[in-house]
Every structure is written in C-alpha cells, then in structure tokens.
Length: 113
Length: 110
Image (cartoon, rainbow over all chains, first blue to last red; front, side, top):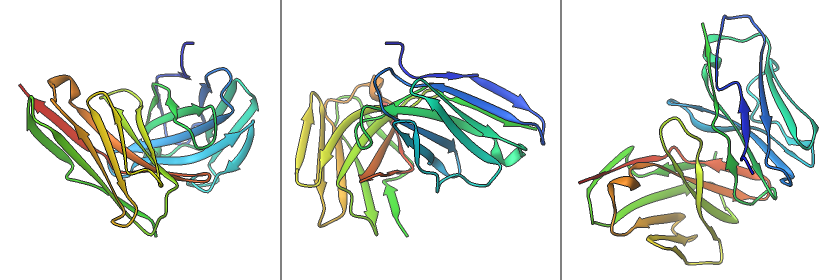
C-alpha cells in the first residue's frame, strides 16, 4: 500500500482565499483524522471520522473550517476564508480502528499571506 | 483542563548511551498511551503502544513504562545511535479522545 496520501504537499495562498486539502487514507482503514501542527501549539486534533461519519469536530477552530468524507477513500479539509494564522502543517492520518495506531500522511504545508 | 508535558524541549546524549524521555499528564485517565517518532518534514510514525493495565512494553531497543499512579510514561532507547535523532511524541488515548504531547527533540551525538 502507498500509505496515506495527501495533496497538495505545499500550498501558498492569499488571505481570504478558499483552501482545500485532500487526503486518501489507507485502504481498509475505517478511521480518519485531521491534525494541524505548529511550533506554538504542537499537534492538534481537528476532527475525526469513523466509517465516513464525523465523530468529533470539537477541535475545529472556527466555522471557517469544514471537513467531509464522502466515501471511504477520500476526505477534504476546507478553509474558507483563509487567514494568516491558519498557516501550519496539516496532517491526515488513518487507523484500522478508532483507538489503534495511526498512520500519518506526509502533510500539507499551508502558508497564508 | 488536560495537560501533557514531555521533558525538556530538547535532549542531547552521547551515542551508545540510553536516552530516557518522559511524558507526564494531569486531569486525564488514558486507557492507553502511544509513542511516535517524527522526523523533520514528515508525519509522525507509530512506535509503541502500552495499555493502562500494562507496566512495561519492549520492542528491540525501545522500552516503554506506564505508571498510572504517577501519571507518567517513560520511553527508553538503549544503545542510542545518531539515526535515533528525531522528535518523539507521546499520545494519550481514552475512548475516542486522542491527545498528543508537545514532543521532545532528541539528538544523539556521535
């Protein structure tokens, strides 16, 4: 398996623009997690899905953030409108179970100017 | 509120020595604890998992202990090598709640 795939790897955008991050989990994994990592705040869980259903989105910072998982092999994290403080590395991770080991993707480095 | 601390932001040790990293937590009762390694520019990679009813877990040169009374986990790397240099993160899990610590950056000097 290719592991968790994220795209794009790097994104540079201007404040106010919409940003969409994409994730393809490992086939057969039924849990998917979105994280944000910054130097100041470390690795923060934003939202997670189990069997394509959002279970807990309490980590989503604001209504500007939204996530979807239309099927077992694809998820998106959208920021609209983006702000400079959203600049971070965003990781997607999948797991065969909600509480099992997580397999992380390579991350998307987002820079909002 | 929940708080997770990992010993010093950075830890330098000499090659061949044992590295010991700590993970302390408050206001939390994890069912189990995981350790991950993260290299620059990459996502974390799972290393070990230990459950609340387990005292110790080993995997090759790695050893993890878990003391729920002290609310502490220790992560040991024996016979450390420069290739072990990375950031190590602990993660506490209970049910569907998954919380990562801030990480410790380990440097193994040749």
